[in-house]
Amino acid sequence: MGNDESTTDGALLARLRAGDDGAYEVLYRRHAPAVRRFAAGMPRQGIDADDVVAEVFLRVLRAVRAGHGPKDTVRTYLLTVVRRVVAEWCAARRDEPMNTDELGERVPGQRDHQAALAESELLARAFHLLPARWREVLWRTEVEGHRPSTIAGQLGLTPNATAVLAHRARRGLRQAYLRASTGAPAAGRHCLRRV
Image (cartoon, rainbow, N blue to C red; front, side, top):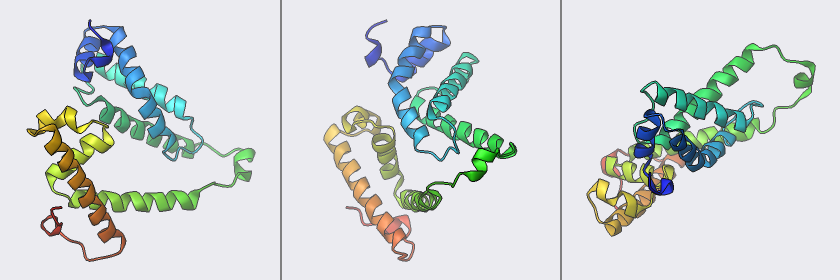
């Protein structure tokens, strides 16, 4: 089996599809902390983040065992399932009548949530203004957490060139975000300064 900690997610998924439960344990240890942080950061209306994590990993296990599920981008897939689970559970809670304890509770941070939502929409708009290559390197390094040296070969670059590309992409995202947040006229991708 080799060193499970250095085994790729794709190899672990193949082992899991073949019935190796140990591969599931490695995937869980590797990704559960990030999934828990992501779930804890979402507005959940009283839903426990640990319950969300358990449900997410159960659904992914079932999908993989049925021949579906992620092929290699496990973390992205897991975070997508987190969004789905939270949305489903929040919708189900809205259908339940409120008890007297809930009626007396004040909704904390509603304004903060709306501000965070508006900010994330601005960031998404700025991200989509970037050239495709910048978006790819930002996604791989900032969202998926890869180091430039580990993805350099996949991008057809040297590790140093990948680090420079990531730096330029971050700078370009800051520029696009500032432009969007100050209400400056929307600039197309061709208007972003290639830093």
